[in-house]
Image (cartoon, rainbow, N blue to C red; front, side, top):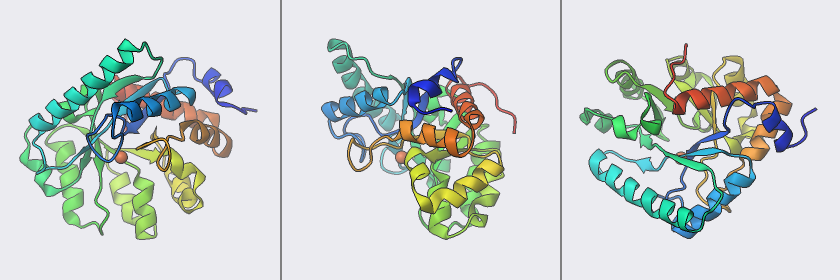
Length: 255
Ligand SMILES: [Fe+2]
């Protein structure tokens, strides 16, 4: 029986442990507010067994254009890496991405390249916290069909809980998308039924901490990995790691 994170790691020797969703870059959004806080978050992730962390700062169409966003993200990343390197810190490797707030306005952009996860075909989208209308689905379909990208739907369980049932998100989940669940949601009872439904549909694909700090919205990756192996199966955890590795390495995934 698997009882700790180290033992879990032994079950997945061929894959890196990846946190696919994290707000760890300093002073870009409501995540880390300083380089020091970024480092505290990275050290905590390392302790939890994370090898690679994808920095996914919020991107809102209309606030900054993609070029401005990428420039700011690059500056924050460089400043953080300078500090990590000068102190020779043992922290997870950082790769770059973004969490795009879904709105019709994002379709004004012709090129999403720099905003995808590690420059892959996979792009993280956050649905709005309001009742979804037809345009929500249309925008996701356009990103799939016109831009040839594969959406990674951020913490979909939170929306299902907000709307009160799984059927509201079912047509979205049935599209050619990958579904990311927040690590913390594994320990909250209100998400249990929704996550069970995702597992049944083979749509619990990716795990992310969605960490914003080391206190109120801290990473719970280790606890979540243990819970997935215990409540579902070690093979589901293995599948999640395989999906994550495929995403950051831009490998194709069959739907
Ligand atoms: Fe997020």
